[in-house]
Image (cartoon, rainbow, N blue to C red; front, side):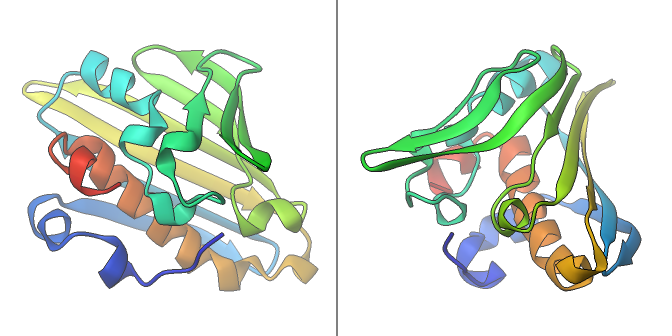
Amino acid sequence: MKTISIISAVPLSLLVSISSEARTLAVGPEHFHFVIEAKSKDRPEVLWARLIAPAQWWHANHTYSGDANNLSLDPRAGGLWREDWDGGSVAHGKVLYAKPPTLLRLEAPFGPLQEKAIDAIWTISISPLETGSSVTFEFIANGSAFSKLDELAPAVEMVKTQALKTLVQPIANEVSK
């Protein structure tokens, strides 16, 4: 996986126009748990369609192949969030629960968490609002103290925050690839 700084990874328009709130609920060498929330003007059905097409909103710098177009997601229990490219492939996560258009839960030890044998659950909730929707990313990771998850937590939270900001802003989908 490529490593990038948040300033180079996120277009300034995303930092200014989309607000998100991240709350770290717990962090330690063997675990972390955070919740990130953002609002969108889109209805849950529109966000769900975008969510299950990760190439539209996941940043290419956070792929193994360097190309978000290599990402796919089968949004049903047992389905995979995959990345396939000439010369390799990776299963980023497995769908545990899908309830369109409001909930997607994955067993998802993305990136460096996978090689550390971390158990990671990523729950994505979409709730209707009077005008638009609220989207919540909840991420829980558990491992051994050897995993030093307290050192990885800020980077994982940054990547998920960036992804959420792109997901909730339709125009940004073109910009973020």
